[in-house]
Length: 113
Image 1 (cartoon, rainbow, N blue to C red):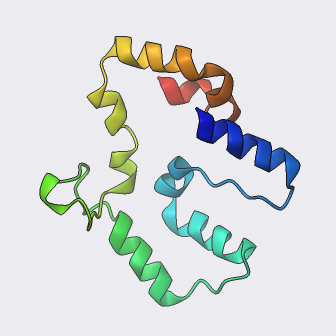
Image 2 (tube, helix red, strand yellow):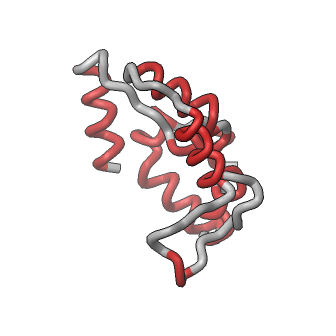
């Protein structure tokens, strides 16, 4: 919660500050990384594209293996909802209740469903 509050403050205080949500990158890694690279004035090279594809491919596992915590390549789309499977409904409700004021800045109602 603290991190999101600080990010929101930076975003309002510094118009050039760009916030990129993990979920957006996971849903469409190539287009969103390309956009990020462009906004930073960086070249989105073929090598960068291949690294992103390799790191986020649907051929990758949806969950991290404990043995490879430092070299993780996940199916980025499948990974998006892992937290919903790891937490029970009461935990999700509590989490939402504790963070709703700040979470509402970045997450829609459908995110919690």
